[in-house]
Image 1 (cartoon, helix red, strand yellow):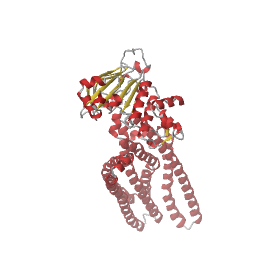
Image 2 (tube, helix red, strand yellow):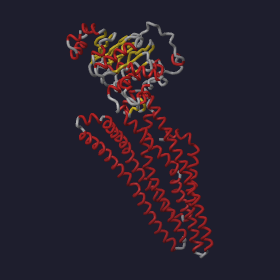
Image 3 (cartoon, helix red, strand yellow):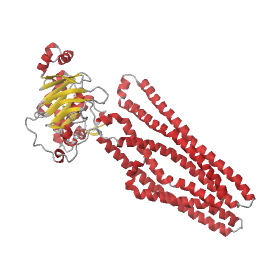
Image 4 (tube, one colour):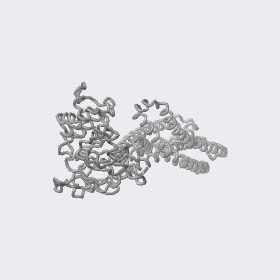
Length: 584
């Protein structure tokens, strides 16, 4: 948890002055019982009204000063904690955005959202309490014991005897609750996952009449986290009453022994009142300490989860800036006959222990060539194209773009060459024009319209009431699947990339629109290298060459006619989709 203190660096003033003002408040609070004792012994005992009024006025002034100090501390604590939370949240978000797909897959979206929101909020609260109470509560406890010792040392031994008992209680509670808090956070991730899947898949759930099953699934996750929360609550709830029991037992002992001392003339009535006030202050401070222990136990669990993310390094890392390729982009090596993409004996697996998704892949794709990629489900088509923009790093072999290993590129330089249309059409909130400009921020209205026309999107956009300024709802729910796919194609095209990757980008289009799209793309993409992933033979049969993947291996490479003659896997795909006449 202390590793995250670096994010308080910009709030040194608040972190120092806040506790100092709280310390001033604690000092003033500790003096009040002694003043009460003086009033009882000298003012009330001697019937001196002026002394009572003078000391009472002093108490009012001290209380006002303490109140002002508390407000100033509260202000500094709010500034520091909110600033700390904002800085940490921004750092986490920035770091997460640098992680590769492999790390994002490992953590999962719901867990990362929880860590950036809930866990940071826990740390934010801990910082506020650190400034406001961590100095005050122990100081009150220690100060009250010292003041009690000054009043009557032998009587204060009762308080000292209660200290190890309280320490033992704290130790037992912390050791029991800390693992439960970590478990609770893990189950919070699980319930966030269930909730995320339900909200994003609500159409599927209703289509298959699975609402009741999903309700039961959510209830199970909710009951699971509730059971853990109850276990945590039971353990944590013991701390405050047990602390109160110990301190009240100490008060009874103080009254018992104090009564004996008063009878013996060793202690005045004012001093015993002050002594009881100090014991009460200790009780209240210990209750605060017990709550702080619970809070910081939660914060420690959250800090561990945040540090786990910050300690995770991306497996896909840009080479050092000292690399000559990255310091100044060098294209002198790029010859006209240099292949656009080369897969050189590539093997890749998503898990080090699982079976590779691709095995011994070797293929050369020339500049300006349109290459279709086809294969059965799970054959490795998407994995194949995801290695080109280096979303993942290969386990062995090389992927080269324009003659350079993709690992030698600066990531922004590499990906500026490539336009990607993923399988899942994802749009962002904003206008249609803004979504298309995601591919090229400074694209003109004419360029946006041209890209939409190529993607066969201009027709439906022009029919919308606000045209290109029509707002896209979250996730594009106000558009059909085919419309979203065409907009994502336009988004990739507007950047005019050297390499265009279409990963099953027309799966939601009807055959007529798909054919029109292929025709316009063929015209537009002259000189552009196109990788066209599809399940449909009709979508890739006109490609310059076709790569057939089967179980992560290349089953054949060639034109449609060549593969019909020589590739059994391709013939089977064609036979499942086309008649004998259509396949020829």
